[in-house]
Image (cartoon, rainbow, N blue to C red; front, side, top):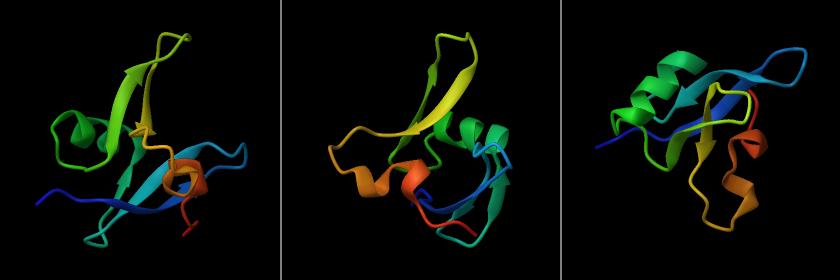
Length: 74
């Protein structure tokens, strides 16, 4: 069964830098991107932004409460 993101840690600019998974494991942003690409984290995906960089985001489901930016801070 794949992990789920339950909380996030942000830097001083408000950017997500770490994610806490349902197992309690904490992964950095790049590791979470790789895990999402491998199907190891549910309900998130990666995309290439206008800036050319790869970004992580929640699957669009119309529920803003489960967006990564709206998850609890740890």
